[in-house]
Amino acid sequence: MKQIKIGTCIPGDKVESWLPHFVKAGFETISINFHMTLNGTDLVELSKKVKEIIGDSGVEVTTLGLYCNPIQREADKEALEYCLECAPLFGAKIVSTFAGAYEGKPVPESIPRFGEVFRDLAAKAAEKDLKIAIENCTMGGTWNQATCNIGFNPKAWKMMFEEVKADNIGLEWEPTHQMVQLIDPIPQLREWGHKIVHMHGKDATIDWDSVRKYGVMGAHEFVYHRTPGFGDTNWRDIFTILHQQGYEGDICIEGYHDPVYCNDWEMTGQLHALNYLKWCRGGDFTPNPWG
Image (tube, rainbow, N blue to C red; front, side):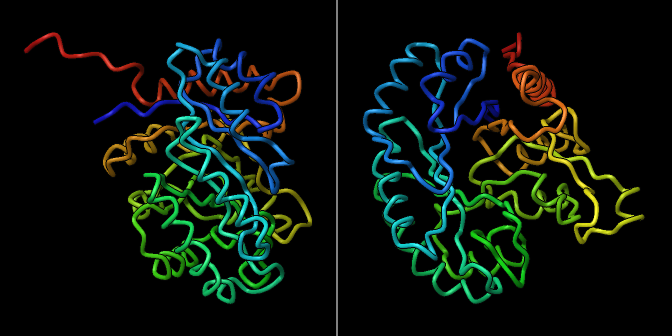
């Protein structure tokens, strides 16, 4: 059993300015993320700068993420192929993304095209010994009107992974995106842990008084994204289940969402999450003093 490492997510356009601080702060891994577009980023050059900053610190880049819509837009699929080409330059073994969708259409209408796109991407990833992780974010979509990601619900996952049976494609999972659907994440993790390729460290707090008074149709906020350590989820259970499922990857804290520990308090929140998640995993590995 390998110790699950704790890292953080860094936006692609902030890597050069932010990464030195995260390395010094003690984060063990890094996920470099782009939203919808690479914005012309030369990933080859960026990988050189990242390696220079990391140096001999031991910090690993585990994941290169481009969260886009490869079902709707061919250019997004091509950008993901570029990420697959460049991920090994960072040392990353995972490329994370959205499943895509036909925007405004019911989830099942996107499944055939999902199969066409991701069978091809999975094959290209396999050539480089990479895995593809699909984030479980709703992106404001619903079952009947998806936005850019159909991969937010277990009903969709069953359809997706029946359509694409490749072993190197799975989920980038976090409890938050299930809690916004009022899904209990812990039993779901027990059922779906075998398909988790990468983990985001983000939690949520559900305001049940708001649910009872206003419902969940948007009249009033009922759920808040939280940095781990401030939300409702028992992360000790998460570590236990991940180990039982054989997960040996990392958990990258996804900050920049917490309504309290944000802005001037962002780094404070992330460092709390780092220390909290290390505590939840049982601290650092200590070899037995006996033979």
